[in-house]
Image (cartoon, rainbow, N blue to C red; front, side, top):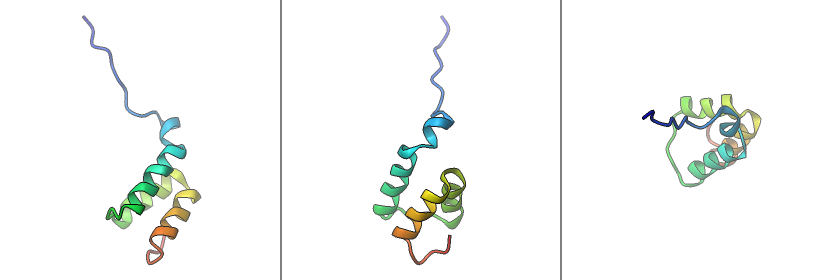
Length: 62
């Protein structure tokens, strides 16, 4: 019997409002994220991610 594969989140679903909601939840909850991780969010989600980071972490330069 072949095991059915369950792939991870597709790129289309990852780059969506859901991803930005997750980022906002992390930022709002006070999750500590390194500058590199924040830059990865910006790379994936672009300007909307940058705006969220600026709103919740104005002391950071992103």
